[in-house]
Image (cartoon, rainbow, N blue to C red; front, side, top):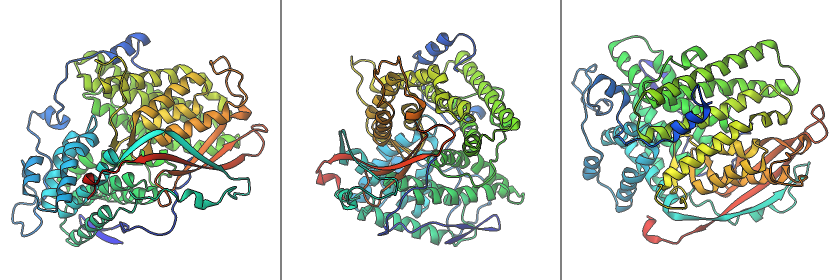
Length: 571
């Protein structure tokens, strides 16, 4: 346990050791468009616009050049601590002066050429392609974390070739006893999880950060940036528990810094954290709740503050929908038990309606931004992603007080629109010159974009044709978004479809699964320390009636991949 003192107040930073444990580990249990004419809105979203170079929204609005955030010198600093100094260091220049082994330099080059642009996605280019390199130039812990992330990302992008999905399923009985020996799952060694090169540099990053944090004047941003990179490392390793431990550590530091005593230095630090770092932790909280984690603090944004009257940029719309989803998921999780106990109060319904109104306000603001601004084609694609998020939140919120899983059938239009937007994104990513769009290039993203929303469609939309379109998109996407792997999501959604459709006589959508056949909830447990491709699933259904006991059973699922032997890519 490391002790970190930010603005005079000590805080605990429970950074775990990077070296692999020999015990098994599982994750904790998980639990419309623009106002006016609907078709006109979708057409507007799909319209192509001239591309423009993305810029930092905050700096663009003030007319100044942005070169990232000021990170104070590590030692013997005699400058005014309140002065903000620019560090105009280009990533290429950073790489030129770095010393290291050939493997380390290749990992850094991959981070620069592929990882940082991918992590930037639609909104965070300034953070990943500029700020991270600037800080790494003066902070060895950040440099070592970059090496680890770049190496693991290159292993993922170039070291494996997904095959057509092969599922190995072992079903537990109600007593929780495997019907086949567990050793049958150990044939896939978790090489990425225990990779020697990655663990060496991950361990160095943690050790260097611990040394750095012994300095009471160490910038808060260094600890927060390290937490973000450590989360990326654990996402790439597929390890849930340490990923969210790092997230919670960083969030506690960020929130404590925002409430620090007022001073000129504190004001500058607070502004940098609030604008540059805290949005990452809000999005990490969303990923954590989607993977079954419970919120442990009061959300710092109210429902009223979450949606402004208008958006100046698509990034503002992204931050706003993240707030709405975090607030909405808190309510959804609270209602999970109450609805099955038939204990939904009028105040609950009023709260649900209040969140729904703010979602409508968000739609209106996004629609106005799209219709009144000549935004780029890239921003239009970003708007499609945000619209998918809004549609899923609308469905989830609208059904969270209903005991019957059939309640989701009332949202077929929303399901279909979400899948159509996903298909448009897939086509745009492949380019429009080919007759048949190719799959997305294999990649790793820090944020949620399409994988978990399409997974939601795959498990909660019971129209056979729509859900199969969602599953097909997941198969073609070939990416990991945080801990959500598209192949994992496709395999689980496909398995649930098989379970639910067993009594259907046709799959043309003219009939839907009966309530008794539906899987109400699926808990996903990663088994990264046994096999990087193994998951344990626990299903919940109500086959004997909504007021009867739950039926629960467990399955293990393995996704098989081919490892390409390419020694020149391994260090």
